Length: 73
Image 1 (cartoon, one colour):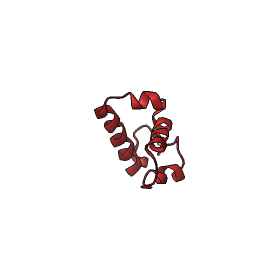
Image 2 (tube, rainbow, N blue to C red; image 1 turned 135 degrees about the vertical axis):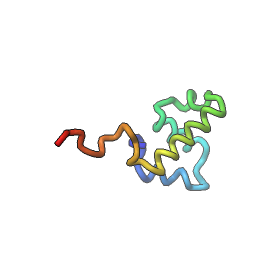
Image 3 (spheres, rainbow, N blue to C red; image 1 turned 90 degrees about the vertical axis):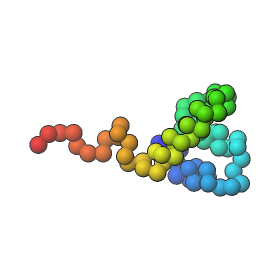
Image 4 (cartoon, one colour; image 1 turned 135 degrees about the horizontal axis):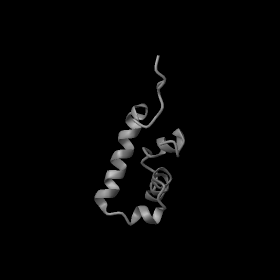
């Protein structure tokens, strides 16, 4: 999610956005080239979007993020 700004995330919900634009956004987020993305099997492609939107719904619940101090009292 950190690979795209809020403006680009919001554009995903624009019904006038093209598939090419969506692919470019997912390419940025996934680190795959557009060609690699389009060569994925359909279930993996769908899973990638599912994980993306799960993270977008709860971006602060990422277990890898540093959201609280790890120092002991």
